[in-house]
Length: 175
Image 1 (cartoon, one colour):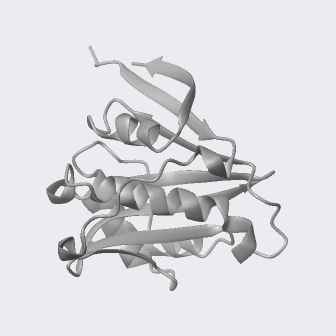
Image 2 (spheres, one colour):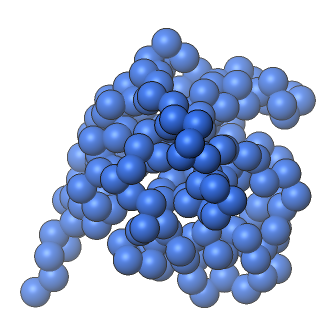
């Protein structure tokens, strides 16, 4: 018998919904940068490094060509958190159309969880999600930012989203 998995669907409906986390102190050496050159290898590395211990499996069979095409899609951005030069986590933004921007993937490598980096990365990613139209000509302004998380994602995920101002719109439970 499998363990039920609860999935929470969350949203923000205005830029003012974002409640930014504290910026890590300078001595922590945390910086957030956009990966401006789409790279299949980087995308796969971040996906497997962040999701390996929390059952992220949907993209594992993707060949490099599919990763590359996916990351080159207009309206998709990859943001990477570094701590003193080491990749610590990432956020993948996806412009969905109709003014919706989804935080498609978000997380930290296991060694960097619980240190405050996630709140800062999430704050930066959501701020950029609200501003996505300014960087992609022809895209309507963002009117809603969405994300979902599940009970497999670890104890910090849902709490971090709520602290940043996301509200749960609905919940599902699957076997």
